[in-house]
Length: 355
Image 1 (tube, rainbow, N blue to C red):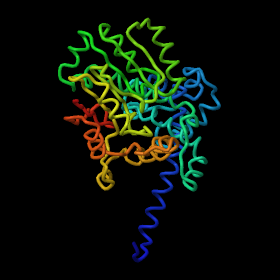
Image 2: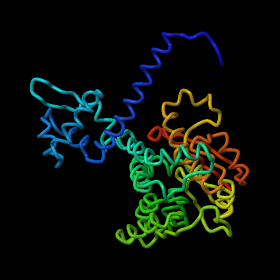
Image 3: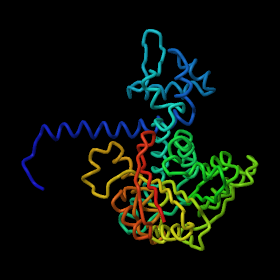
Image 4: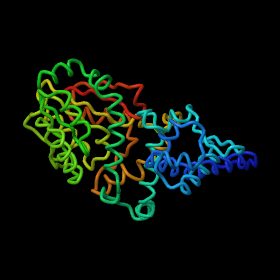
């Protein structure tokens, strides 16, 4: 595309570009504020000095003061020059504190630092192809477990499970269920506690994550929860499960078609597969109005797509979209697929798939 140079447009974009860079740096400070608990502490304080905030949070005042400088100039925290006091407005706290559940944007900000750690390897694979394996992503399972817990606590029992007709009653009576790509097993442990008559199996390729899940299951005395180190691509029949879950796991797979076919074959005749995956369109132009799209495409480039390509996989990426998902689910043999949205989880679509 060519055209006459527009100086006003260039100036406007220069300002936007600078805002984006400032936002990237502020994201790091938001992550620090989340991890140190500063946002949670400030939400419960009146306007306070840096010394008062640091004391309430149990942190070093000098670091807190410099962090507050970023927060004030970034228009996140308010500052009273006459008293030297800082205040987190409740309207801002709603997007920055743990009490906000899935609306806590500061929790998401942790991904900026996580992905920044692989920036140079990503630059390398842009040039040579291939991908970067899971081992390069420090804290990945920790952050995913935190994110899963936040979303599941807000949605699992009151919103997610009721999407599947009769599922809650069946879980109460006792069925066999599995979570593919379970990570540290947050969902499995919640389900096992809530439905003691059902039997739950968590599957994940990550040995460290499974060990963590097993340890927590023992601590919680959950005799109906089992965790196995297993490549999702090796799942197959004979049918052993009545219900299978996959939370944002299919698009990462090296062989997603094989995984979906294996899940289909592992379900009993009246079984259901609930696939929770990223809410995007497979048509790029239909994502322009999605406020999360830049975030999702970046995470996809620097994690979801590359971990699949590292295994010589298909590299679907996080933004494979509803159309492509429906195509692969039909190819796997599912006879019906109903797609649902949850207001409490704008990040995902909920696919209810019948064998």
